Amino acid sequence: MTTGFQKALDRVTRVRGVRGAMLVAGDDGLVVAESLMEGVRGNALAALAASLAKRFRRASETAACGLPQFIHLQASQGSLLAAPAPSGMLLVVVAEADINVGLARLEMLKAGEAIA
Amino acid sequence: MTQTRAVEPWTLDPLQHFVGESAARLALLTTTSGQVIAQHGFTRAVDVMSAAALGAAIAASTSEIIRMLQEPAFRMLSHQGQSHGIFLARFGTPRGPMLALVVYGGDSSIGLVQLFFEQFTRDLAAACPAPEPAKPVLAADFERDLHESLAALFGR
Amino acid sequence: MTDDVRALSAELARDPGSLVFVALGEALRVRGRLDAAAKVALAGLEHHPNLADGHDLYARIVADAGDVERAADEWSIALALDPHHAGAHKGLGFANFQRGDLDAALEHLELALAADPTDQSTVQALHAVRQAAQQAASDPGAGASVERPAVFAGLEGADSGLLLVDPQGRVLAGGLRAQGGPDVAEEVAAYLAGVSQEADRSARLLELGEWRWIMAEGDAGHLHLSAPSASALLLLVRDKSVPSGRLAILAARAAEVARRWLEGQTL
Image (cartoon, rainbow over all chains, first blue to last red; front, side, top):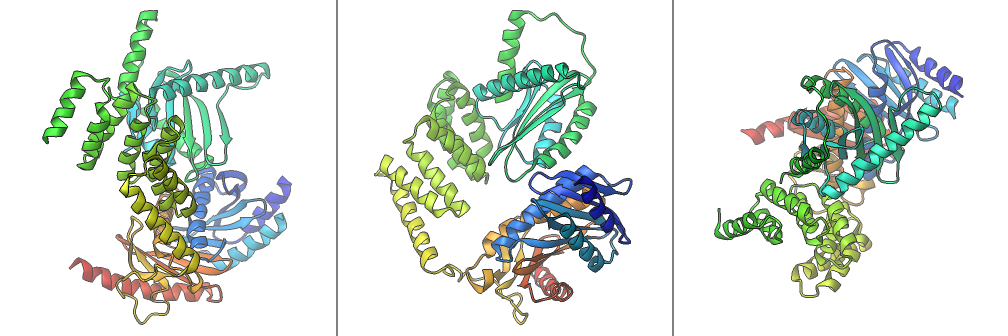
């Protein structure tokens, strides 16, 4: 199963501008599997992305928009992307600010399906 | 408004920062024998003393199992309940090993607690004054220390 | 220092184990001196850890300071010590009402009234919560007629899908309805404060620079959150048929309108 996770992450990290991808236990914010460039703090990425997704989910569900299927945080020097994965996991990507988000999103959704 | 108090004043700032970042509901810093160094969120001394004793006992019994398995020393345990999680960790400081017992709710996670706990241990190490020479421990000292600790922890 | 606080303080100084700490803490609380009240309550609880009134007092102090969850914990302790404590039931009624759990709020308020049938404030609270529960049951859209500045007039979804809030999660302008139904502006605004704080922290700790916006595609709708100024957050909500690129354009237009309005407010 771990190899399956790794293959799915590798697929996402092949997108230009992606600095790291990881599977995170959504409720716990702990790393399940990761494929990160040097310098990316995996535990921080996992904990913070899961917390952000959890907080955004409350707002989204209260606004009757349902469970977020894709979250994109755009910052001045980078991007953070997150999508739900099977078994309560979250697929998280950290990338350059000018990443092709459409392509990354597509690969993330495919990776999510591959894990299922 | 919830109070953070410390017997050892140098632990106060790191603990307040940790609690603020991790959104911990309760936090207790003790020696490995359960002597309280600082606390956040407890309103009753009886709860603090019980939690300190239980935390030290859990760490000691887990350490013993770990020793039997010939594994490296005890570092941390966590339990996720329905509405609260518990995190217990042993870590080193220039003043010797310490235990941290943290209770968090749904607005936090074990990932966030662990993340900011790493920073907390670094902050404690940086804030720790030079070690004092060891003194003999007498029963009378222990009783006095206990009362002084309670006074510091609850502002009496 | 007023006379009653002075007299109570003197009494407590004479006898630190006295139960007068409850009256002193309450006197300080009603005067808004919450730090002093908390010190008195915590010191009193040291002498009387099993006094339900002491936990009720500390709960009211932390509730006044805005920490309703912590207050609920303390009221729960008070109830564990005295299952018929009217103040603790009333407090938990308040805490559950704040959380939107009207059934639990009603249950606690009814128990509070049973414990002290003469407390008029409980009667009034019970009446208000029953009305809110009836309203929620009969008309989910009721209570939506809050007057808010028409900042986004002329923009699509001006009062149902555009919400301007301050960093503390209070609504400044606009409106938000869940699928065009009930007004959820206040509730969503409260959550947005936490989202923005987490976005700030994530961007900082992951070295991503300053966050500019967050976009989420939900099962049933899309959301776009940005910060048109340091003192405001803007949420745009649209049906899922609106593509994310168009969402960003709409959000940029609304942010410009919000910025102009905010500048006008500070003049």
